[in-house]
Image 1 (cartoon, rainbow, N blue to C red):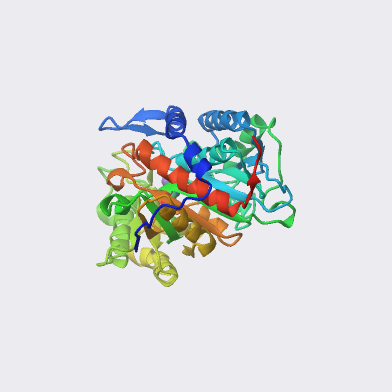
Image 2 (cartoon, rainbow, N blue to C red):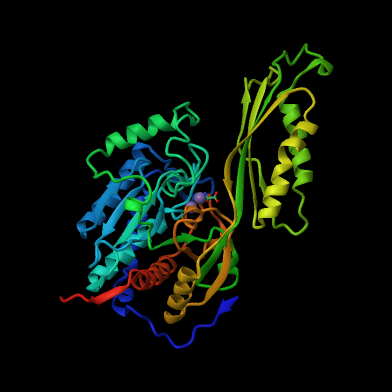
Length: 438
Ligand code: HGY
Ligand code: MN
Ligand code: MN
C-alpha cells in the first residue's frame, strides 16, 4: 500500500537537516575500497568476509569515525561491535540501530554496510543538531550476517538474541578448513583493546527497540517509484547441507552399471527437488548455489558431493511442510549413494512491531517521501531481534533490484533519504530530551 505524503511536518528538523549526504557517501566509498574487486561487467564490487583482516580494517575505520564524535565502542563474545551514544538517562534501555559489515564473496558496496553507516550518520546528525535523547542509542555491527564464509548467516545476532548458544558454530569450517571458533578467537585477540561487554541482553534489560536500514535488494521500490520501504516483516528461510557419498572409480573403465556416482545422484536429487519446489505463483524461493565435488577430477567418478539448499517462503506452514519433505525427496531420488541431510539455518517468518513500522511511516510522510509497506525477501539480523524487542527496517531502492552482485547500487540521494528517515525514527524512539544547549 503506498502512503501519499500530506504536507511535510518533520519532527527533529535540525537532525534531519544535519544528515550529510556527502559525508555518508564518502564513508560508503571508503568502506568499498576494503575488499574492492571488479565484476565481469566492470562494476565495483566488494569481497569482505567476516573475521578477516579486511573485516577488522573496516571495523577500525568505523570505530575511528565513531570515537571522533564521542561514541564509546565495545564488543561481545561473538565480536558484535557496539558504538554507544549516551542518553540523558543512561539507565534506560537503549535503542539499537545498525546492520552488518561482512559481504558476499561477489558482493556489492551497499548490502549491510549502508545500514551501519546510516546509523552512524543519523546519530552524528542528532548530536550535531544538539539533540539530546533520554535513551542511549547504540550503533551495532553484527558478526557474520551473510554466512558466506561460515554458514549459517546471522551468527552474531542469533547469539546476541539467545536464539543459539555462543559456541554453536565453533566447529563450522570455511573453504580453507579454518574453524569458526578459531577465527573468532583470533578476531577477539586482535580487538582485545576494545572494551568487552557481556553477550546478549545486558543486566536483563532488553533493548527498547531495534531499527535496521538496508537496501531492498529487489526491484519493487524502483519499479513502483518509491523512496522508502516500510518493511512489514521478513519471510522464513531454511538452509540445508546435503552430502552424497558414493565411490570414486576410473572414468574409462568402470561400467556405468557398477558406479556409485555422487554427481549423477546429485543431479537426480536436484531434479526431484525442483519438482517439489515448483510454484506457479513464483513466491517460493529455492536455490542450490554451492557444490563441492570430491575428488573433483575429470577422469575420476565423483566419490562425494556436498551441495547447499537455500529454501524460503513467507508462510510458516509452507516453510515447515515443504521443508520437511526435502530430505525424503532426496532419499527417494538417490540411487547409489549414502545420504546425509543437515539443517543449518531455520528462521521462521517474522512480523515487525507497529511501534517501529509506524515511526518509519510517520518519518517518511513528514519528510514528503513516497513510502511502500512491503515484506523482505532477504533475511536480516532484524529477524532475530523480533523476539527480544520491537524491531523494524527501513528500505531504500536497489538499482534494477540487483544485489549479491558487484552491480548493486543505490544513489547518494537515496542513501541520504534513508538516513534522514532513520534520524527521525531514532529521535522518536530514543525519546527526545530537551534540546541540549549550544
Ligand atoms: O541471504 C540473505 O537473505 C541475506 O542477504 N544474507
Ligand atoms: Mn544484508
Ligand atoms: Mn546479503
